[in-house]
Length: 419
Image (tube, rainbow, N blue to C red):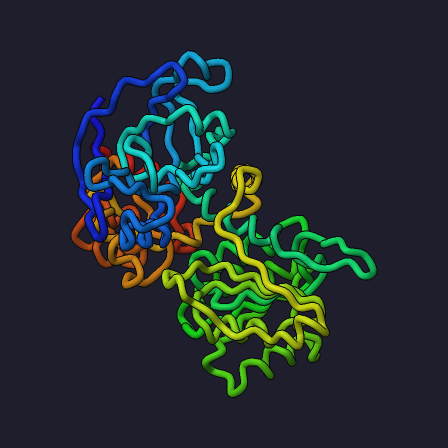
């Protein structure tokens, strides 16, 4: 079968190509990809090429398909897996499968599997490691967002606190504690707000900071303090650029006690150091945002490490259990990560979008691999709809859904635009 895919050949060298997929073996599967959301990790892989730790050294001869936040349906199931999977079944994938301890992952390491493709061959190790996950949601894009949401879930679970008198760690954020989400008005920060409000280990207070008033306003419109209050949480938004002393102000919100948990959603030294300064006793700073600079560093107060037991943790992705939890929360309607999405595009928009990702404002860029469409901001639908029936209808649908992408919008787009 022929597929169209965006492949990485080297640094800044992404190409949309059509080529033949090999026949599947008895332990493999053929699948149709429907949606993929573009991750900053894909940008890093495209910029670093074979120097990236997950990318093979011979991509100039054996290019890999990029994209690892994807969802689709199974087209053909090899004999080995017919008792567990069925043709036509929706699926999501945990790319960090850790098969035999390797760093190989779809979207970084494989010739025939990645999210920015029309059709793919799923290799045996994905099923062997339990990384192919059935998905029963009503929209493919939710399956695409399960992977980034699993990274958020994993970070919340990786945070830890000490148990007085014994050498044991209590894993997870402090239930009923204070949580600060710094630089949290971006797409991943919004996912963190959604999860913090609805998870089973809720804080009593969440303070979200950013320096962009427009992004903070959008967050507050979607995740309102009133909505959080229904779950017993005091939710506040703070523009740290608008306060004279950010440390003093943030500490005042906790009556000087500090925050049990601080999550840093931007790889910016000043933000990391702010997080360190507002930690409570036994506070945990979770450095969520992955820097592109391998020499990125920031100062840490080791006096507080020694005398007040402050500590730091970082995670890079979630595990399969985190992804399962994300899928379940979406299927049950408990979380709605559609707030993360600000742009929609087709397979033809992938290369340019990936290579320019840091320069494109907004949140997640969602790709539908079986359509051709320039990357388009949801906020531009209404303007474009004055001369285009497709965007006119999409504007109407998104407006009815508080300006958010939705299952209805996805169904309409795929009906009208699929190749």
